[in-house]
Image (cartoon, rainbow, N blue to C red):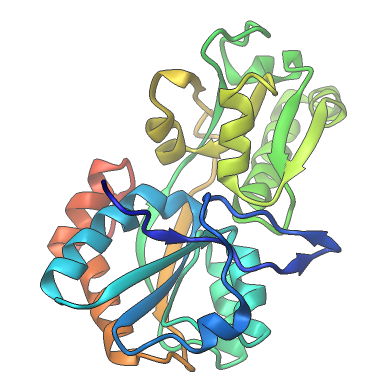
Length: 271
């Protein structure tokens, strides 16, 4: 039986709320992460990278016998907070440049490279109870699921809605905002709620919608409103295993990494 690769989210408090894990594994203590053994590489990665990094973890372990890849998947803002508070990781991969830049300015990570980009979309449940056919009808979603502004997809959502409001009018923005019923801490929580019919629509990345398959339908965001999310990666300055961390970064930036990223729907940087 295939073993679970992702380790649970460390219990941290963000804005006074305990952040939930996005995997079923038991959450390790901060001390456990700080004591990462030499045969383990700890990768902190944005939740939207789940399938890609799990696939690459198989390749990495095959190329490095005896090494285990421990994936910590969560909202980029949560992972940044953990690193700022001393949790040890070898690599940080963010869903935006904002959180990576903050860690660089604090000298908590090394040189960062953008390895991929992603495009936000709106998703609706497969049954589409609100009967939304295009983005301009988003106000029909009486239960809209978004992320908090600190989450990259939440920040992108705010920018998209601001762009749309400028062209579609203030009434559009007010009606959409009035229908927000939940603000989540990572993009996979939005995906899960909409997939289960707990929301009429939500903002996620195209790659998340692809991962959900037939459980959701995609509503395209007009290019005039949309933004592009960039994904940087860097070795953490206090990495317990910096050589393994750099090896992981090299894999993500390699042709193999680009192939896996493209397969998941990411746009990748040319070598």
